[in-house]
Length: 478
Image (tube, rainbow, N blue to C red):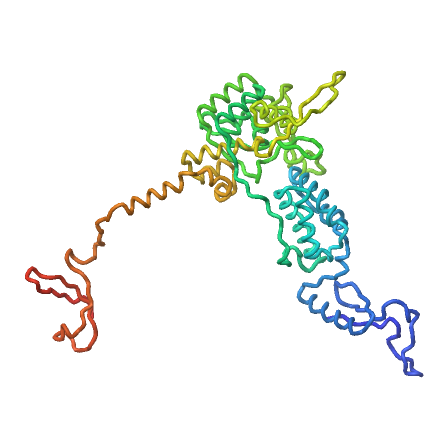
């Protein structure tokens, strides 16, 4: 393999007259020995020939294995690598891109951004984890840590790091979210919250409770998604907003469409809602609100029209933040679940309005209706596999991980079944080829039947006692 060491201070060939190597114009300037000629490897200079020879041997070996990483490529600071190399290559959906960018720019870059990639070691990672937990909750810290690991994995693939320091050091422990069991509402709480909403928004509670929909799925549901004859609702899309406040339609979470059974009472409420508040046609781009840059993007982002069943009083699509602050939290306060933390003064034309400000726990937001739907289904004995399909989970394991505590009778049913097995001694059921009634197997040593064999081997026989106390013997095998 190519690769050699060049002396920058002396010429390669000696002078013909003196036999000595003459000095070059670089004599005494900079590092003397330079390693050159390795394909795909940048030249590197050293002060001593020993260091140059050692690095040349290592570079040759690592290059042959395809594992060579030039340490100089790791001198780029984390911020520059993210901004110039990692982030521009991402192709995330707008619903994912916004939250990811917020976590990286607000937490990763401020805490680690000034460090060069090769200086992100175990100590730096432990300090980062500790500082991160002082800024955000455990759930957000866990996701942010995953973003950092993804960035460092890309640096490894880009030959800027030999290994991902997060995976290399055993002393580095990622932050973990505090495990919280999903909480469901009682019927009285659901009714109180529904009563606190405007009439046109009461149906949102029915959709979350009766179908287990996420908020974006409920706001993106169209009247054409209700199949009253088949008794199902087709969950095909959700309404999302990008970081610039532009709405668009996209597939439900995980890209999973599904069909959810429609109960007769929910079907009746749906028909009643459609009569009182007629659905409004809404046309929005698909997948991405950005204007398409080519024909392919134009096809992928082609707008679709949906007759939304939930709209504002002006017939517009619902912006989730405004709805949460002005409708949902107000209903929670009316139901006595939260209280106002203050008020916000804003000008509306020529009038000044004072709007109460509420601080609601995350577990009291719209998603609690989905948890309540799951709890009702499981407590009624519904199959976890079926529920997983209706909720749009990727596997029943996810459903069990989230909602196993909603199955208080599951363990008792199994215990009762096992107890029934042990209730009384059952009559044995013999196979068809078993011994006749009264016969058993026994190994009889040959001295008792010397007339049959003198080999000293035991015999497998079957026997039964006769009425007079005798022994009837039948040889099975020798």
